[in-house]
Length: 472
Image 1 (cartoon, rainbow, N blue to C red):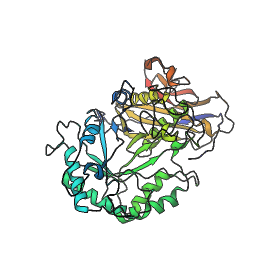
Image 2: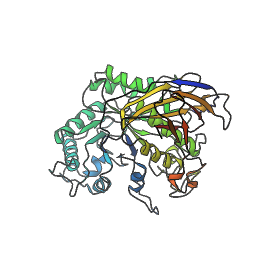
Image 3: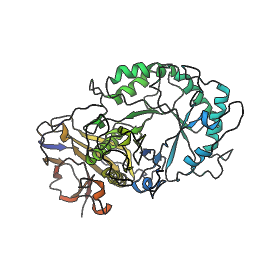
Image 4: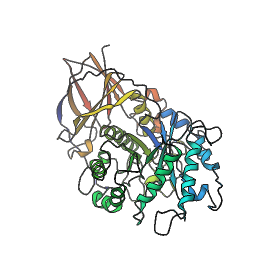
């Protein structure tokens, strides 16, 4: 992660754009179609009163990637016996409510691959394990988990593989993909997540992932997955900190040049930043975390990412060693530095709910960036159709302006509004900490502006805004 702290300036700007008329599109998205995920969404912490998925459902999370893959070494302790123990995974996945879709992981596990290789020590036994596992959770009525209500149709082969020096992951991907498809032809298979290589991205990607992607040659995966963390001062922009190159374009082009369809979906099942001061990283406020995570969704989705899973953990806490992953959640665990106590919600908890609330029934295929912020104004404006009406999102990247001073404002003239009024809603509550929020419904600043000849003058501060249009 970059440790550069940037500051930003104040400019006046007129942003022209045109309100487009689109044909009627159904906006009744199913849970599976939702873009909002978390890794993991479930909370299981001693002493917390709302363990389970109550918080996830409250803030609008619709996908979960739970913490523990189905490891072959755990599910089938003795490969000489065709006996499987699914007790843990039945609980892990069986407890997820039907309002939240599940992405499952499969992996060989400890000591189940040939030395210095991803090749299973017994390919036939591994294939049988994969098919049995997928069959148990696919919901087709054949050998399903007893009482299964929430089938799993999306499976990932391992979490990440870039830390190993073994170059034959393509074979494991192929073997697992074919086994999954044989058990469940309508299931989808994700590539192992590409790590958050924030510096020297291209050469490190080429070294770790290039040979595997080329060997797959356009086959054996349905969805690309990449992971991306970074600090909150622009980390959402998906840039290599060394070269400044765009990593999303690079990933997409690399797969296309390696034989994959240019339309293959790209997900990010680990995306996020932190609050507090993890070991080795600069301090970030709850507010900085909240606004950056919001920008990751809007910017990433506008760039063609299909789904984003914020990570790690709705309730923070990894190994409780004060690393970044012990600071990335939206609910404090009560164990690490800068922690305000078990169960205390951060500002990002409430901003996540506001995001999903405002974007319910939005048609994300229409999401576009109408002003890209790369000019000296540093302002981003997005538009998305929601129930056949335009919804706008805007922010100012104040931290990139070297003349920025605290509480400065960016005055923006936006024209093209077809209505009498706009309502402006801040994405993050105007508090220093989430613990200060007593009532979610009154926590957000909301203002109304009159439209003058299609034009509205807006003053932006550090917090992104939603802009909706009305005639009364």
